Image (cartoon, rainbow, N blue to C red; front, top):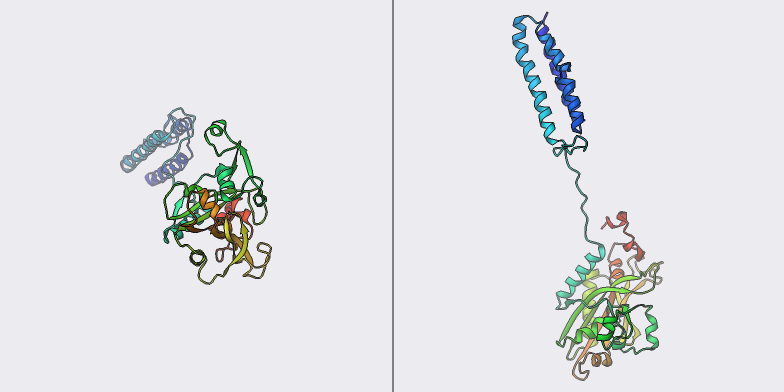
Amino acid sequence: MRYDIQMQNLLKKLQEEATHALTSVKIADELRVFEVAYLGRKGKLTELLKQLGSLPIEQRKTVGPIANATKQSIADAIAHRRETLGVDGKTPSVDVTLPGIRPSEGHLHLMTQAIAEIEDIFSRIGFNRVRHPEVDTDWYAFGSLNMPADHPARDEWETFFVTAPKTLQTTNYKLQTHLVLTPHTSNGQVREMERGKLPIRMINIGKSYRRQSDISHVPMFHQFEGLYIDTNVTIAHLKGVIEYFVHQFFGSNRSYRLRPYHFQFTEPSFEIDISCDICAGKGCRLCKEGWLELGGAGMVHPNVLKAGKIDPKKYSGFAFGWGVERTYMMKEGLKIDDIRLLYKNDLRFLEQF
Ligand code: DAH
């Protein structure tokens, strides 16, 4: 009878069983139980080894070394596992050899991407990105822009006022008792003029706040405000810059239009519309009539230049202020038909971009 072959098979099976069982050992207490179950006085392997003695001497010679090797390998596996287990016998261990979980890769928010692109387009024609306060005084948000207190033109902005800190109230002569969450980035115009460096070619990109929320409005949104002041600046320059931007951002096939409008801080003034990409100019629930208003523009009013200590007889300039969100929504092929989608933080939406 070839007991040795039988024995070898049993040893092999036991080894496999032990290797498998060891994978579910998570804490030191379990490892101790495991060790006793295989190598203890009445352990599975010990019992097998006891039977070795009853084999004929020849067969014992072949199986002996195999049995020893099996014992050694189980003992080694136990020792190795012990090294990777928590010392207190209770904390489940981490097997660092298991494959890891790859964290999902994110990307910049759509508005951050849009702002970077806008900044880049304007930098190519010499407009520097600047930053001005997003909580500012009434003077920069309205007064300096030819809108004195109680002027009805202010009604166009539904504004959030906040009480100014006492320390600011005493040090800033233009501050009354309130600050305003800037309803537009135009507050940067006179602030930029006050830096005293001419010519000015700025692009001020920042947050704006208005008490509005619907399909095309959110209470916090972004604007980019361009300002160009130099000698002999004309509407032709304004049109050229707007056309350049439209073609860079939307492609050369998109139509836009300048529509006469009124702003207190520009004369003449325009609103700029872009042909709607959602409905291809047919009219839809977002744009209503095929065109979507992206912002305003015009030639800087002499009173604004004066507020910034610039002589309107020597210098002229143009300005424009556009919404970043609306501009981005009109990018070809995106078909984002509700501005609020941008701020819902729904990954099913965001991950498409
Ligand atoms: N500030 C205006 C708004 O938020 C937009 C605007 C119009 C900005 C004309 C300008 C401008 O710089 O010249 O509605």
